[in-house]
Length: 321
Image (cartoon, rainbow, N blue to C red; front, side, top):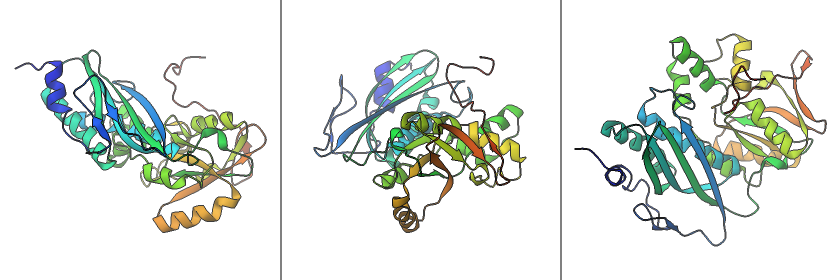
């Protein structure tokens, strides 16, 4: 029997992914009613994923559901915010019950992990795309912003860089390493780290469009420059046996890493080190914020170059000027 729009909502998106007592009214009405804590500021983020642009046309439905929420959670991590509620807009070419169930499973698996309640949304027919708006909150004064970098602050990055870009290249060539493939399809947002960095880090951003491009957003917003030490960029075991130049390109311009890049003032360094030790977290120091505008790469042999930055852009192709 064919499913209507309301059947789809009732069957796949009305179940409790994560119960929250601050949801007064969730899925099933014209809008949601939510209780925002009185001593917190509201935080909002929205992302859209389009088939063939943000994920392969034949990507598993579970992975699409996971990633649709993960990219928003990564934005929250970059702000140091606590996620709470989400709305979902799903456009699909036809009703496929198995696909819908797997998609919902992927979405709710991550939602339950981060205690996010789905409180509304929309479904419609059309080319496959997924939009998620995430809402949450943060304590005033704890937010991480792009415009807070200052000369003398050290630059850090979490996790490893370049795995997702390597996976995409491997997909195009037909040979895929399971480790990097997982990083592409099921990224792990660094929400816990972001929350710990509130009051410790200065500027922060999540690495979604490529390290150089995203770091450039911090530098532009903060009106300063930076020196990056390429040999310090962290690489996973899967990348360490590849040619150095290829790995560096993945790390600098590949994107889809969803790691955090952040700056820390010298007077906060001891606090950062203590926090990382206590929480058994690992980050890599990769550079320093400079007063001189622009981004420079300084190698161990003393070479200093101005790197080519060509991170992901939705409206520019490789052939555009």
